Image (cartoon, rainbow, N blue to C red; front, side, top):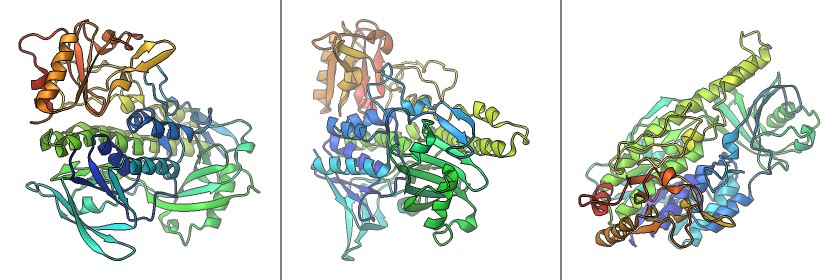
Length: 550
C-alpha cells in the first residue's frame, strides 16, 4: 500500500466512485468538492446493470443499499410519448435496457433512483474505507503541476471556502471529475470535440401526486407535448418525487424568468391536472452538449465523467459511461501508484475509452433528435409527413443499449489479442452476446449448486484473476507463480474445484478447451486467453509484464 494520496477533484458519482475504486487497491485519495455536501438536486437517476456490477466491487453493503432505493417494478419501461401524463398517447418504446438483461447475462440488477440518494450511499462507503478524505467547501483555484509531459506528479492549489486558507496539495496523479465546466480541462487547454449548446434546458425537482392520476399507465420517461408544456416527466420513486426537463428559449433560461411559479404551472400542464398540488424543491439550468474531450490523459492528469464527455440525457448513459470509464482508469492508476505498472498502462485508458464515449455521444444525440421529431409529429398530427408512430419505430435504440453497456471491445497494449473479434450482432448499440475474446467483458456463467449459485463475476477481485477450465491446473500454478515473481495480485481458480461446479457451460462461454484458461483484468475485461494447456513458449509472467507496461 502506498502512503501517497491521489487527488480527486469533484465529489459527484464519478469522483466518489474513483475514490471507492482506488480504495479497493489500497490507494489513498483526497476528494475536493466546492459545495457544502453531496447533491440535493437529482441530476441523474439511473445506475445500469454494468454499473451495478462495478458497485458490487465496493462491497455487499453498498450494493444492497443501492438496490434498496430502486423504483418499484413496472417503472423502468416503457418510454411514453403523450399529450400529457393523463392525456392521449402517441407512441411508446419498450426500454428493456433500463430493466436489465436478466440473470443469463449478469448477476447484478440495475437501479432507477435519484442522484442525491446514490451519492449519500457512496459517500458513506468512501468514508468507511478509511482511505478517503473528503473535503467539502474547498475550491480548486489552479493546477500548479501535472499537465506537462515531463511532470512526475500533480499539484493542485485549493482554497478553504470557510476560512479562506490556501494550500497546495500534491500527489502521484490528479483525477479530474469536476464536471462539464471543468477547471482542469481549461487549465490543460484541452478542447471538447463535438457540438455544444444545442438547446437550453431547465431541470426541476418537485413533489406532486401524479401517480394516482395515471391509472396504472406507468413508465420510465413520460415525454409530453402540448400547447403549454413540452418536455419530459421522470418518476424518481413512484411515490410523489419527480424530475422534469423543460426545453426553453435562451431568453427564458434564467432563474429570474423561469421561476418556481412558472415551473409549477408547467408541471400542471405536463401532468394534465390543472389543480395538481406541486411543491418545487429545486431548479437547475444547463445546456445540452454532445462532446468528448480531445485526450483523456495528459501528463499526470486523468479526465473522467462530465469533464471528459457530455451527452444528451436521452439514453440514460451519461453517469454510467462516466463510471465505466473511471472503472477502466482506476485499476491502472492504482497499479502505477503501487509501483506495479508503468505510466504507459494508465495512458491506455484514452485508447480504450474515448471511442466508446464517442459512439455513445453520437447515439445519445440521435436519440435527442428523435424525441424532437416524435413531439413535432405528435403536435402536427402527421402533417409533417411522418407520424409519431413512424418516428417511435425508428427510435428503438432509446432505452435499448445493452450493446454499448456491456459490449465495449478494447484494443490496446493492456490486452493480449488472440485474433478473435466479438461475434457479429444485428445492432452493436442495442444487442449484446457474451464473449471472452480478449478485450471484452468476461462472461457471466453460473457456478456452484442450483440452490447456492455464484457467478464467475463473483470471483473477480481487485487483482488479476485467472479462470482455468477443469483440466487447466497447469495454468493455475503458472498464474500464482507469475504473481509472486512480479509482486502483483493474481487470484487463480479452476472451474470444477470445490464450490465451483460448472452450471452454465464455462468452457463454451469462454471459448476455450478443457485445459485452457483466461486472465481477467481488475476491471472485468479479458486480458489474455489460452485455448489449451501451456507449452514451453507460453508464460503468464510475460503476459503480465506486457499488460503492466513494465
